[in-house]
Image 1 (cartoon, rainbow, N blue to C red):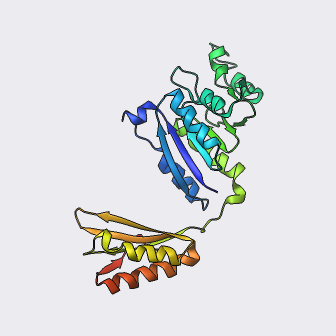
Image 2: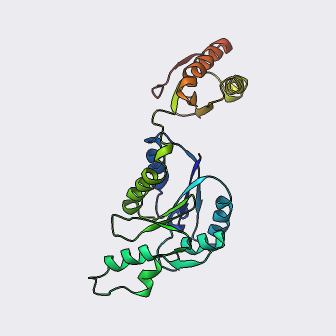
Image 3: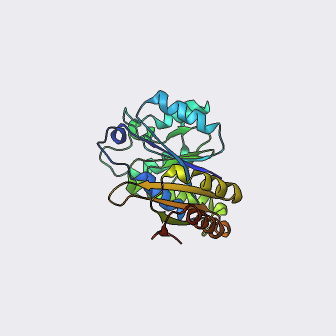
Length: 252
């Protein structure tokens, strides 16, 4: 099962706000033995959001979407999801109940604009919001959360623990790496390809660093039972090529 993230908002792309969701998704998935396969940033453009969701809805990935589910003119995610799925946008009865309860004692009351926040693609399920009771929604394998971290992150944990508990596999992903000096990436490609061919359940990675200490972090990540053998093969290969290496501080 692959997990992807879509993070929506002009404020992210313009640099007015720094994204914090990607790091939190990686942390939340990692704590459950899962991993983030991809992440996409989108502006507040209804056509762009619709096209992105049309593509992901046609796939099999679990998608965690952040932002754009409010009721202001720049919030397009709810309507875009409905268009992408080819279904109507309707007021969800459970969402309506939550919104009415949230604003029951508010001086302004329950307005049509506030109820709009409960209009989701037909067939959706709500995602409870412990912060202010304005829910998000799930549609198929897509889960739509607010852009505010204090709301979105508890809702993210709820989604993972409620819908994907059977997929949890703590300790199912391991990583080990070494620091290689004196080599260029091109000189290690054949070794990396050979390791990737021999060990099918890991991914080989290479992270060059130029300053202040020029080196390459060379490593593997994947099934724990293959990581030990794969990193041993890389160590032997680097030594055979005549390059010095040392254990990485990130090595497991």
